[in-house]
Amino acid sequence: MDENLNEELDNVIVLNDEDGNEVNFEFLDLIELEGEEYVVLLPMSDEGEEDEGEVVILKVEDTDEESEEESYVSVDDEDTLNEVFQIFKEKFKDEFNFVDED
View 1 (tube, helix red, strand yellow):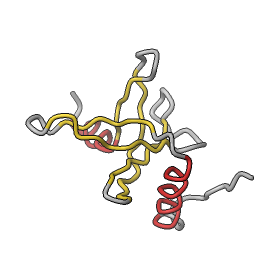
View 2 (view 1 turned 60 degrees about the horizontal axis):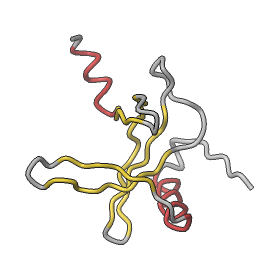
View 3 (view 1 turned 90 degrees about the vertical axis):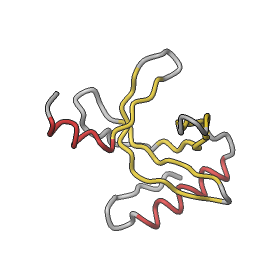
């Protein structure tokens, strides 16, 4: 496999959607809130380009201490999502153009 490709993909996370299809996300940040960790991901198109649009925020859960694998679960609490997103927006206000939807 091409070494340069590996370096480019270091910040890419591949997750399976509800239909079992692999979806690539660019890892943007890890945010800690009230003792929990959340990842902020940006969906990528099939060509490896960043999709313009919404980020995905998932909660990090340790599944197995021995293997040190993590799993990501969706966050149902709207307040938590908004709080994590506000922290993310503040950290990256100079790097991204955020569009506030009313």
